[in-house]
Structure formats: structure tokens, C-alpha cells
Image (cartoon, rainbow, N blue to C red; front, top):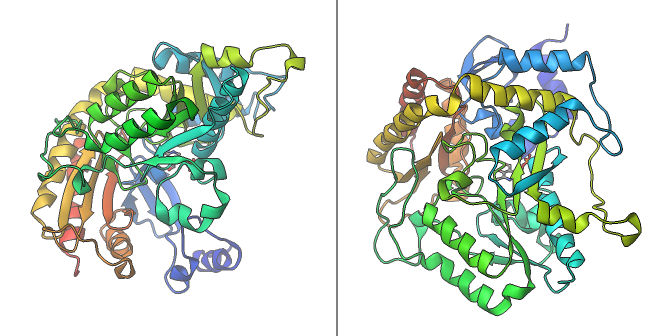
Length: 461
Ligand SMILES: Cc1ncc(COP(=O)(O)O)c(C=O)c1O
């Protein structure tokens, strides 16, 4: 049998990991994960680690949930895969019905793909083609937010606003309009320091005049009729730095774009399926977008799958005799995969049968009040959170908010120290966050916060 050490050497020889400078692992080993259960990952020596980032924000009900496993196993005996053009199957149909049921009235059609980037690509392309079909050919522009993130494919990346991810590929991306991020902690629009107004669930409410929407108002007044769509992550810019923003911002933005007839694309790839305390973050603002992008938690993290849900109005603009050339020519090999559909249906059953959203409210309260303890640490500049997500922004100087130099690699230090304390922490630069599975218990939240406090307070910065 190949030993763990040999396998790690083979990894070094053959593999290239995502978002990873492979040279970092020239001497250090990658964490070799052998198995998982509930909140924990176990390495080959049986040491356990809390999966505090839900394995890149997708695990919902814990690893290894018996109901999801059994749904996948029975589906495996029936139909593992079939292409989704000209064929269909029960799981995809039932899941489509459930998704339309769960999402706001007006969202009526489900288009499947297989990851968060493609969910957004589909929305972008559908919106673009919709305006062509409607004869509004001047509507070609897209608006997105600084610090927004919608994936790594070229279309999604074109509308991304995280410089580190996009910078090297700038010349490859298409032009679009970028508006400021509602980044309250680093707000250049208000004179006063940010006032903490979030409730027990972390829902931020208005404590400002929304000056950061000024550039959008101006842009729409100048070019509103040339814009096809705006894309954003509702209430939480996740990869951009776990930036939690006020619900009024989202409502006002939606009003503005609706006034100009522009499509609203809500990217709930990260926030969907309970992460913010409601099934979808849009519910906090009472919105119905033109496109809703889902992935990650859709299958509770078991199998890749994505869905872009849109309105009958959009669907009908493509519904025509073939010769009219209105077909949506887009699709992926694993569109609507039956195993993924079975996992997603089982996950939605768990939401219902285990009353997950109801049970979440006290856990969210515990997380959001517990994270406040970190405020006393000298290098914690901001503490923020929403639902099952909580974040600390570490800074060199609290008064000025000045960041640590990137070469200090604060995030990397925290990752390594976290492992020693049995935590998988994977900061976004200097932003340390918890993105907890919904199944975490109150005791586990306490334990995770205690361990994280030891990690952060023990840093020698
Ligand atoms: C909001 C959001 N959109 C899109 C994506 C891209 O998803 P994927 O990595 O599955 O392509 C992510 C991934 O983190 C995300 O957080």
C-alpha cells in the first residue's frame, strides 16, 4: 500500500492546487485529509480539525450526512448520468419544482449548470441575449461592484472586483462599469466612524446616507439605457473580504436599477441555502431579481451543481420557432446531473424535516455575539458578520486601519496556527472568517471561538 508520505510526494510531483502557491509546500506538507464526519475533517493520523469554512462554503448539514449519502446511493443504482439536451429525468424535474417553490414569486425557470462561475456566466449571457431578442441592442453594458466576486471563468471574472484574482488577466476581460463596494469599515463617503447597527442575526441596517450609491445614480442617469444588467452578491461580499453591508443598500440599489429597466442578477452562490439565516439572502430585502445564481450549498456540498433561476419574461423572449435563431446555445456536460439532483433534493428535505432554519436562529445569535469578544485584541480593526458567517479584519494600526504588508503573510500564519489548534482557518489575506456549516452546535461554536481566540491572540505580529 502507498503510505501517506509517498502520496504527498506524488502530489508534489503530479498536482497543481487551486489558489495555491505550490512553492509554499516545497517543505511543508499539504493537510492530507483522510475522512470527514459532521463538523470534522480527519487527517491520516486520526487528528481532527473543525471545518470552519464549510469546505469553501458549501457544506451545510455537516460532512457525511446519512440522508444525503443514502439518496446518492439509491440514485446510483438507477441512473448516474445522462446528457440534458433532448432528455430529462425525475430528479432534475422535482428539484426544479422545489427551487421555483422556494424562491420568490416571479422566478419561474431553472437552468442547471455545474459550478458557481457557470451559474453567473449563464445569467450574464441570458441577459445579454434577452435584450437582443427584445430589439434593445444598445443594452450591452454590465455593472458590478468593487470587491465583488462571481467566479474565475472569463465572463464572471470580467465582472469581478477583487484585484488580486483579476489583475493578471485584465487584458482578457471585457469592459464593464464598476461601482464602489459598500465596505462600511473603509467607507470614504461618511465622516463619522461606522456605527454598529447590526441585529442579533448580523443584519446591518442604515446608519448612513448611502453615499456609496452616488456613482451608480450618476452612471444610470448617463447610461441607464445602455445597461443590460447589474450583478452583485446580496448582503455579503464573500471572497472580496466577507464584507457585510446594510439591507437598505440592497433595497435602494434594486429600486434604482428597476427604474431604468435593468436586469438585477443576484449571485447567491455563497449566501444561498440558509447561510444568512434565511433560505436566501434576498429575503431580508424582500427582492425578486431577474436572475438568481445558486451553487455551493445547493447539494449541501456533496456533488457539484448549479442553477440559474429566471423569470417567465426572460424565458419567453427565447421561446420561438427554431428558425428565428432565439435558442440559448449554452450548456455543460454535467448539466442537471442525476446524482447531484438527488443530493440537492435530500438536502432540501433535511431543511424541512430537521427544521434547520428555525434551529439556526439561536446558533446565529451565539456566533454573532461571541465574535464580538475579539474586538478587544489590539490588531482587530473590524468585527462583522451575518448569519453563520463572522469575520475579523486584522490591521496594523486600529486608528488608521492600515493593513499589514502582504509579504508578512498574516493569513498564512493564521492557517498554520489554526491547524495546531484543530481548526481549518483560511483567511482572505488579513480577514479571518468563520463560515460555519448550519449543523454546528452551540457548544461547537463556543469551542471554535475559544480556539480561534487563542490563535489570533497568540500571533506575534
Ligand atoms: C458569490 C460567488 N459567486 C461565484 C463563485 C464561483 O463559484 P465556483 O468556485 O463554484 O465556480 C463563488 C465562489 O466562491 C462565490 O463566492
